[in-house]
Image (cartoon, rainbow, N blue to C red):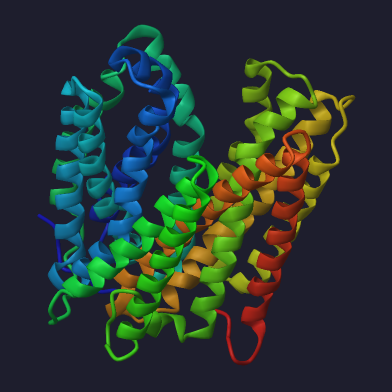
Length: 457
């Protein structure tokens, strides 16, 4: 039976460890499903006899559902309890995974993926808040470091797991495998997750609609602008999304606990942490998408060699994340994050200068340096975001943490598409150079938390 929790002390042992396992199993499944479907897209497109651009909606539907639901579900968690939203999200994710496996048409699979995305949003939006209430404050940095490790490893191994499953089974098993794992995780979460205090207020349905319109129009507009070849309609959609977001922000200024946490954005250290997070994840996505093209077109590596060359980055993130998280319990996150993003920028700049004669070692140390820098930044920054918000707004802070990550990744992916459209041969180098600049900007924002107006957490 789960216990009520003192925010300062976290859960008692061993409940703390069972809660952490449940939290990390669920977030690993949600993150894995962001990438495993990519590998199966050609197979699914052939089976359903659809074009590639139609099959892409299997991925888009999942991502769009997550982005539009993160902040509303984080807000709902503050009202009904983080535990309830997490369990409901996990149950929906597991059920929708079965629907995905049983789908016989592209429409059925796309709708099932959208439901799966809403379930994943329930997991992701509450993830950081539950970590905060599971661990005592003096261990929070280390816990967030392990959380970052789980997310990074899940992102890194997703394509490999998908390839291994497809080598021995049909594509529906990519989703069916979530069912037994989801049931085990649900039972563990129901037993161990903390029960937290709730805020007595009504759910902001109007704000949720504006939030969905803002993200939906912007993401749809970007797709129209960069891939569908309809720039005018894309610009109109983006403008509508920006207008919806502006209305949502103005609406929240008069509310004590708004759905879009403008109250938290008034806290300088929180706002700077969000901004530096967006910069870092934009830089990460710029690199992740452009590097395979660099390795293929410039270094002339095979797909297998490309996969090996991508490996040092997530490995170093996994190693440095928990270490940096532990250090952030003792040293200012502003300094740790600034150092990390400077290292990240140096690694990205070095990658941009690779020549066709570069050896495996030449690439590997650059990739490892990027992973060290990114890993050294992420956990301290996430810890600061969570602790700079009042305990009653932990859900909003966690939702904003996930939103910043997805916003940065979406922006980075869009920028790559633009750079490659402008210069197919030089798009990779341009993307990496811009990524290095964004990492340096993030470092400046991180160090800005040392200023008197924004004391470091």
